[in-house]
Structures are given as C-alpha cells and as structure tokens.
Length: 455
Ligand SMILES: Nc1ncnc2c1ncn2[C@@H]1O[C@H](COP(=O)(O)OP(=O)(O)OP(=O)(O)O)[C@@H](O)[C@H]1O
Image (cartoon, rainbow, N blue to C red; front, side, top):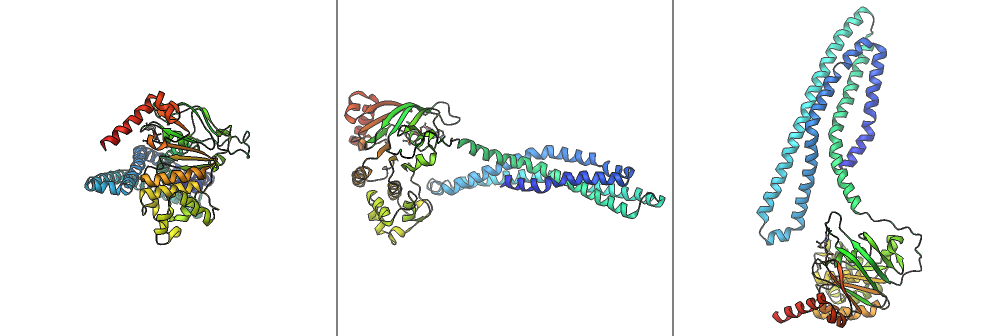
C-alpha cells in the first residue's frame, strides 16, 4: 500500500516538481536577473530547514512503519488465537499488550508529525518574507520603468511554483523511507519464495507414473543453523506405499514439502519418473501430486467446491466417489444441504476429523500419480482410519503413496518404511526388517508399546 502510494506520487508529482522548479528559475532569470535573487536567496534557508527536520523525522517515520507492522501482527494474533487466549484467561493481558502497542504507535506518529508540521510555518514565513521583498523591490523597478506590473505578477507566480516544488520534496523525503520499509517486507517475501521455474528442456509430457527418487537430498531453512534434511536417499515405487516415520521435528513435513517444490532443496536431487523436478515446470510436478498437508485447510464455500479445489472439472459422481473413499459420505449426507452445505472460513463449522477427511477427498479427486499424506489421518478414530486406508489402497492402485507419520503402528503394512531421525535416514525396509536391525525404529515401536500398556 505504502509502496503503491509512493509510486503514484513519484510518477505524478516527483517528476513534475523539479521541472516546475527549474522552469520557474529560468523564466524568472530571463525577466529580471537581479530581482530573481530575491527568489533564490531564501532557498538555502528552506532547504536547510527541510534537511534538518527530515534528518530527525525520517528515522521516526521508519520506526513508525515498523511499529505499524507489529501492531498488525499483534492484532492478527489476537484474532486468530482468540479461543486460545480466552481458554488461558489471557484476555486482559492481551488487551494490555495491544493497548501498549497502540500508544507506542500513536506517540511515534505524533512526534514525527509534529516535526513535519513545524516545517510549514517556517516555509510560509520565508515565502511571505521573500514575497514582501519581491513586491517592495519590484515596486521600485516598476517606478524606474525597468519592470512591468505584469512581469512582477509573473514573478510572484514563479515564487509560488518554486515553493510548491520544495514542499513536494519535503513530503517525498518522508514518504520514501516509509515506502522503503514496506518495500523491504515485499522483497523478504519475494526472496523466500525462491523457487526456480524449471528449465522445461528435459521434461516430457508422457511421464507420469509416479516413480519418486530422492538422491542425497539436503535442505536447510533460510537462516537456520543446520540442515533439517540431510543427504536423504530413497525410492518410492508406483503401486507401493512408502511410509516416512520419525519423531517430532524429525523433518517429515519438510521432506514432503520438498516434493511439490514448496521449498527447493539445497543439494542433491529429487527425481519424478527419472526427471529432476527442477527440470519440470512446477505446475506439472504439482499436477501429478495429491497432497494432504498436516493442517487441513478448507476454504469458505460449499463442500463440493472444496473437494473440487483438487480438480475443478470433477463431475458430481467423482466428487461423491472421492468423499466416499475418504469416509466423508456419512457426515456430509447428515448435513442440511449435503454436498452443497456451506463451510465457514477455514472450515470452522466442521470437526477436525471431518476437515481432515474433506482434505483427503480433495487430493483423491485429482486421481494423481503420487499421493502425499502428511500426518493426514491423525484426527481419525481407529475404525474410520482402517476403513479409509483399505479404500485408499484400492483407489490408489498403481499410484505411488507416501505417508508421513509418527504413528509406527499405522504403517506396519507399508511396502517400505523410511525411518527419519534428525533429518537423516536411520533405516529403510519393511516393518520386520527394521525391527531386526534399526535401533531408532525399535525404540519407536517400544515407546508405542509402553504407551499402550500405561494407557
Ligand atoms: N519454516 C521453518 N523455518 C525454520 N525451521 C523450520 C520451519 N519449519 C520447520 N522447521 C524446523 O525443521 C525441523 C523439522 O520440522 P518438520 O516440521 O519437518 O518436522 P516433522 O518431522 O514433520 O515434525 P512433526 O511430526 O512434529 O510435525 C524442526 O526442527 C523445525 O523446528
């Protein structure tokens, strides 16, 4: 917003102001060079005043912009975390925090604006004084016959134009740093989404079986000390289920997100049907993937619309079929308008498990070659989970299925299990193989059994 305002101003007045200033000076000099001195003489005073005041005001305006940003952040946190704040009885504390931020912003704004408004009386004072002198000396020259009344009037107009240009300059001096702070924020966002577009050269459209291969892939979040994915290699084959297991923070989500190129790996390569995904336009990579993220996100709209986010041209039958595999049919048909029932923003009018099932249906309706489930069954009860996994196995058919989870017991049947520990592969194999020779896996299974005994 600030950047946009600045650019509009820049194009409209910033170009016009210096031109008007130079034009006014040249025209004044051609009419009467001596009298022009009364126009030019007060300029250093005004420029000096603008310089001194803006030297103090610019840092204030910069910090005002940053404080405004922080205020928005606190406000957003307050709104999105409303229930948590209420549940933990932190309403008063959050109110105090918000008020403090507000007072801070208004104090800074007052100080900065006080400085800027002090500029106007200074400029008006100097301008009016130079006008008095202009008229005074002009009158003598008119009397002497070397200047005409019309020329003096033109002089006064030029003086006005010059002052206008200087005023614009002082406004710009404040607007630029404010816009610079906002522009930096935009650049930060643009920089973090640093995905390359794919070279398109080695990619061919008849690929698409879903064979996925990780070769020595490493990834570090920008600014993080150590990589969260370290030299990971494995192959997930079509028609098979590959499970990625690991404890909290092992890097499962990060690894999954590298596949649709939500992040770009630092080294190594990820190959889809033998082609490096960096060489495939990312929209084509994503077109082959049905991704169910850890946090199921639903949009405001009907249930059918939400499922169709996966594949816009899906027929009603396809939407219903996807919902039935995701074990969503029963609760959807219990809703007043069935598939046409409206979901609130972020799906707040359905339960966590129902949200998860709709997110799964959205991925299924794509009929992708590669399914990515990131902890996507966590909110489902045992019975629903079992039914869903059975239906899914049939539905996925020849596709590649990758399931990331902490729940070892839910992926025992997987064709292949990749055990992640602190971002590195601790073992690969079937449940039985890993039980024999992977200590991390043995510990995970033992911890789960201990949990069941105490439960
Ligand atoms: N956006 C991010 N920026 C910086 N570090 C991150 C970011 N997201 C995750 N991490 C770090 O990366 C590591 C791996 O996180 P990740 O979410 O991939 O783990 P996970 O195995 O999926 O964990 P969980 O099962 O708890 O979801 C963690 O140590 C986490 O702190």
